[in-house]
Image (cartoon, rainbow, N blue to C red; front, side):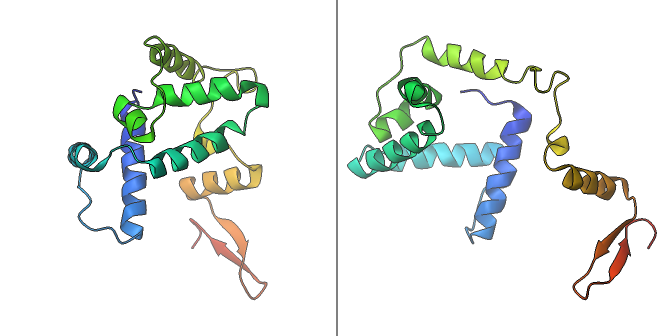
Length: 161
């Protein structure tokens, strides 16, 4: 499945930070270097095993459980279509029909379009509880805010300090 360049870099930096916090050393310094390292590792180590199938099936079924039960077969099949052939083989999942991946890709791209709940689209920073959205906006603009500190008093923060 193709991922837009900005999202791909975002995933890389997020997971690189997770790995660093986990104490993993020698994480490649760029997305391209990480991609090459990851593919080489997968070629050498990723093979079918019954344990892979158990973990993969449990994860797939957990994800499918978030949807109405009548959609379970469709959700499972869509999950298979999101994996590359090597991952499908390592999990022992069935390969999707040839047109499934392009159809799924089109459907997922369609979800980026404006919709009836957000007809003008949205920015991730604008989603969430309003007080947190407002606090983040103030933080980004340097607007001074009051906040309660541990002793119960209020402390002024932001541009007025």
